Image 1 (tube, rainbow, N blue to C red):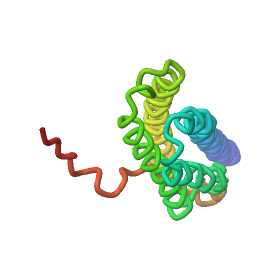
Image 2: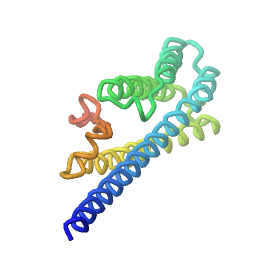
Image 3: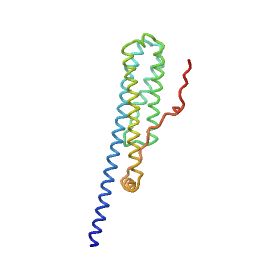
Image 4: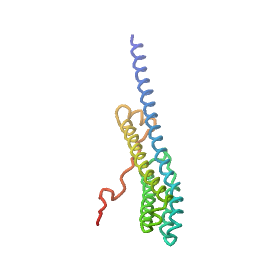
Length: 191
């Protein structure tokens, strides 16, 4: 009789480890998938930038410093390769900082474009600007999805008794995207 009890206990423990491990793997894969979607949207933005810069170049050739800053920011951002396995708070912060540089440079480029009425009416520029705006929205959604997946994964990694399995097999918490510094202050609009 004791033998059957021990077999039952071992079976329950084995099922627990099996279910916990597979659950962690599934959640970790969801984080990786969400991260891939974030990278895809950032790549889409990076691919739009040369077209936007070339369109503005034709109208605002003397704004070469702004155009160069946009190109350099894009180069810095695309030079950082961050995979789902390398997601540490430090590496994610570095990645976010590079992407914030692109966003800032693009903002300056759009501001320069405002000074050129012919450019603002150019169909290519308007289409690229709309695509860029849509891409920024997609980036926001992809980042939210990533944070949701990371939150679900982190919650599972930290909860008892799954945290025992997570610690045993090396499942570690994943970092979140955080708001850019200064974003808590609304921009002031003056007329």
